[in-house]
Length: 117
Image (cartoon, rainbow, N blue to C red; front, side, top):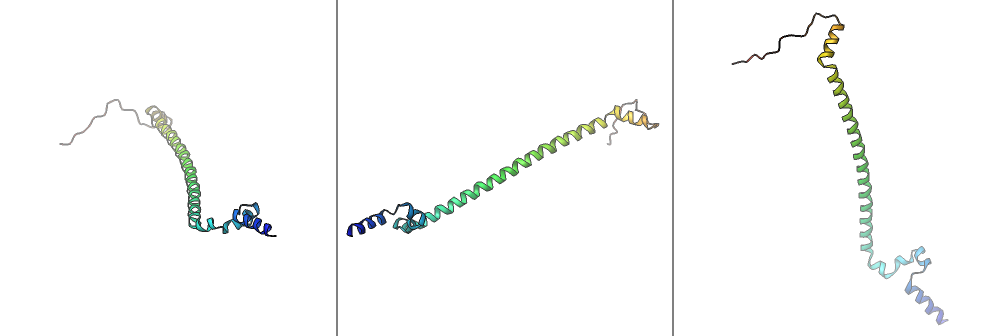
């Protein structure tokens, strides 16, 4: 009978059986009681680390999206700029005026500046 009691005491001292881990009895051991504040601090840091990682991933996704949008806008602006340059060329303007049967003509004299004194 005493041997059984000693065996039970030895198991309680070890406290590392699967039943004690799954049942939560391991948390009542002296080691975990002494280290409660440290365990809570580690858990808080772990939660902060996970949140920080998630937030940085979300920001990186947003940055990539904005970079793609910026590239698209730059290409659109380049396209519009080239279209405007094509439409504002002197030959295109002269062609447009001649289609409208206007009396306007291209000047044969070069432009000159009027200076104020």
